[in-house]
Length: 299
Image 1: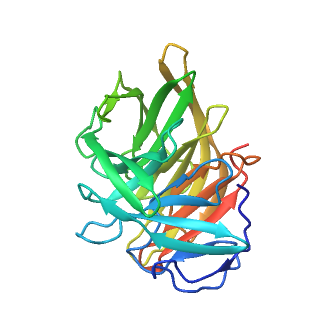
Image 2: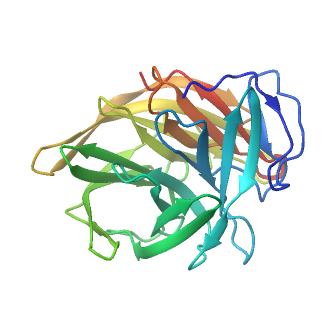
């Protein structure tokens, strides 16, 4: 799926999106307020013209999951019905490799939801806490890696400014027969973003893994619901999954900054399958809503 950067924005399928002209910097608006920003993205598969995104809402009945679709040069967003235990503060979502329609969604305090999506309904299969939750951890990222039928998960505490780097975690992943995610031995590494810098920086606001095992991370600075915001996407290391299911992560001594985005708060980075290396980037700009664009970071 090669998403154009100059799509006309249309009204939302279910009334969540107001029409808006494309900003001059190629970001496309997909939400107009703090309830409709993008906190995590998952493509709906190779050749698909749509992706799911989570909303980090906390009150009952507010949107938890939405779909953004690209058809015939138009962009539209629709809210999905959430069927099951209602999460608080969803921050990431990933498709489960080899299982069409199956996803893992992660809440900020470390609860993982396995869901199935059919049409406009998402159904909770099971939910469980992440392993190795440390005091003060706040999670905004999740990525899944697959090799030879084996799976691994990567996630990170986002960190907070120069005195609290992010902690990147990795573990083998399997599923119980009833659907519960099961995590193996956990590996962890500290990470500090090169950009942006200063107080309040979230060193990891999302993670993505390319087909060759490169780890990409979004980072963001958030001064409040009205900003100002600042973001970057960087290559931070590599992950390998052995044929026996062991997962190894190596973080670079100095991350490579792939792009900086003043005025935006990137909370979603997704490598799009079936493309020549496009990444889909999403923002949660709080009261300004959410924005979307592609960038050539996943080759």
